[in-house]
Amino acid sequence: MSSIRELNARELAEFEPDLSSRFAKALFMQGEGQIDNRQLLKAFRHELEYRVNWISNACVEVAPYSVSVQNTKDEFSLVIDCRGLSAKNDLPALRRLEANLLLSQRPGHTLTTDSLYASRFPIYIVPRQNSKYLIGATSFESGDMRGVTVQSTFELLSAAVSLHSGFALAEIVELRSNRRPAFLDNNPRIVISLD
Ligand SMILES: Cc1cc2nc3c(=O)[nH]c(=O)nc-3n(C[C@H](O)[C@H](O)[C@H](O)COP(=O)(O)OP(=O)(O)OC[C@H]3O[C@@H](n4cnc5c(N)ncnc54)[C@H](O)[C@@H]3O)c2cc1C
Image (cartoon, rainbow, N blue to C red; front, top):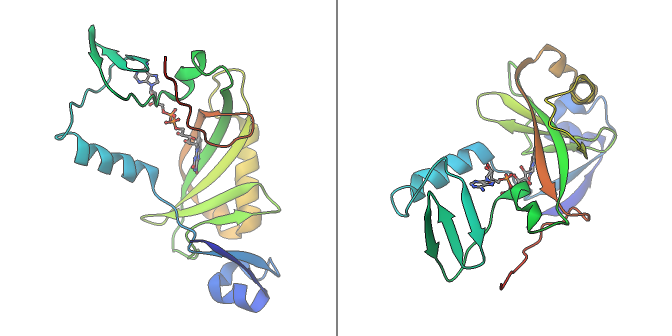
């Protein structure tokens, strides 16, 4: 369970010494966690590959009680459709949001919390293994499928450096742009289709 506590400058200096000269207060979300999505997906695959009928790189067609893949249609009592934006035909309310994120590597490891959200700058910074930091994410309504733009890179980098000057010397390991599905209220939703 996550509980939120306001930190004063002295307490912030104990948690994140490198940030205390720039911020007089902060919010600490005790119990707030994060998962490395890439590690999680690898672990899922490792666990599931030999336990289920695992088919890779195939386009599926889903219906409430059937899945068709590679010219074979199988019936099921429950089908969970996880096609993301590709389910838009069945869920017209789904909209496409573009997000950009950046992975950087910094010598040393001076951010200790699981994740850091900045209120003055719209970013989060999440320490990952091997002194890597995930910095994300710009988010805007997307009409096309462009790659990473100069503007979003600029916004992410300047926010990161404003938050912690050490990022000015960071090596950029990865810059990524992608589209994510969202409903109008941005809340996750389970939609049950019976026919
Ligand atoms: C740059 C970026 C940063 C983000 N950062 C965060 C973050 O820090 N924290 C967070 O919680 N969320 C984050 N998100 C959002 C998160 O990634 C999405 O909310 C999540 O991936 C949506 O999951 P999904 O399974 O609904 O769709 P997707 O992740 O889009 O997965 C759908 C999958 O289905 C496959 N597929 C589609 N159609 C078919 C078909 N017919 N047959 C077979 N396969 C098909 C697609 O190839 C895809 O692999 C971020 C998103 C982006 C783009």
